[in-house]
Image (spheres, rainbow, N blue to C red):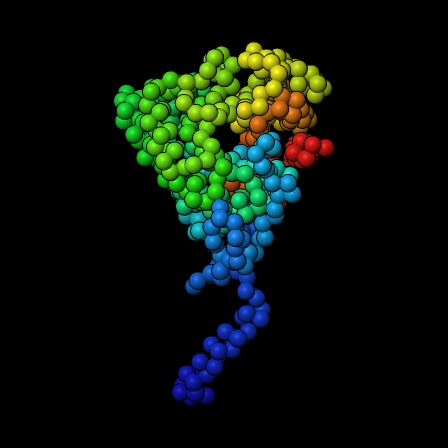
Length: 389
C-alpha cells in the first residue's frame, strides 16, 4: 500500500476509535483500584442536590455515596468517626474525590451520623513561635472535598486542627507542653493557618470548627479571644475546643473562651482483660464523677480509642506500646464508652481514628493496635453502638 493511502486511513481510524470507546467504557472514568481517574480532558459534570450547603462537583459518580439513614439534627447524639488526614500532595483532585467517597461510604456503613476531619499542622520545637502547614497537611481545597462528600451523605461535619508531635520529642514532649518564646507571634501564625480552613468549613456546610486540640500550656492565654473573634467572622457554626482528659478532670473551667468543649477521653480503668462491660462503665463513671455527677449534655467525647491488645485498659492512650493482640479489649471498650455516652446524655462520641488514605475493603496488615478498621469485633461493636441495638 502506498504511503499516501496509509496516511489517508489515519483519520478513518481516529473516527472509528472515537465511536467505539464510549460504547466500550460508557461515560464513567476508568477505575484503578478503589479510587477513580478521569483521563485527559474535562471530567463529566456531577448532578447536584439543591441543598445550599452542598457545593457543585463532578458527576456521574462512579462510587455513589451512601446516605445516612437518620441524619443528625440538633438535640441528637453525635455518633462519629475521627478521620485523620495526612495528605498525599501528589494526588490529583479527582483521586482525592475517590478517597473521600470510599471513606464516607465506610463511615455511613458503620451507621455513624457524624465525621470529624482532623488534619496535622507543625511547629519546629516546643519553644518555637510559629506554626505551619507541611506537605502532609491537606490544603483547605482538599478538606473542602471531604466536607462536600460527607455532607452529600448526610453526615454532620467537624473540622479540627491537631498539632503534630513528631518534632516535640515524644512521649515526654507533647502538644500540651509547648511554650512559644513569642506568644503574640505564635497566635498570629496560628490565626493565618486556621482562617482558610474556617472559610471552607463555612462555605461547604461544616457544623463545627475546633480552634485547638490539647494545647494545655496555652489555655488561659488572653490571646484566644482575638483568635476566636477572627474565626467567628468567617465561620458561623459551632466553635469548640478539645481538651486533654486529665486537664478536663483537674481544671474547674478550661480557660478558652468557647461555649462548646470536647474531651480527648483516655480515662484509664484498672481492670483485667476479662472484665465485663459493666465493670468498665463503672471505671469511667468514677472518673467523670470527679468532675460532676449526672448528665453531661454539652460534652462531646472528641477522641475515644484503645489498643486491641492485652493490658490496655489502664493505659488506653498509650500510642508507644505494643502488647499481644486481644480484639475483645477494644470491642468491649467501645461498648462500655457507648453505654456511658447514652447514660450520661452526652452530646457525642467520636472514635479515633480512621486514616483518610485507608482502603476499607483492604485494611492494612501492619495496622496500629488502636486502629479499628478491619477488626470484626470492633466494627460490630461500633455498629451496635451507633444504632442503639
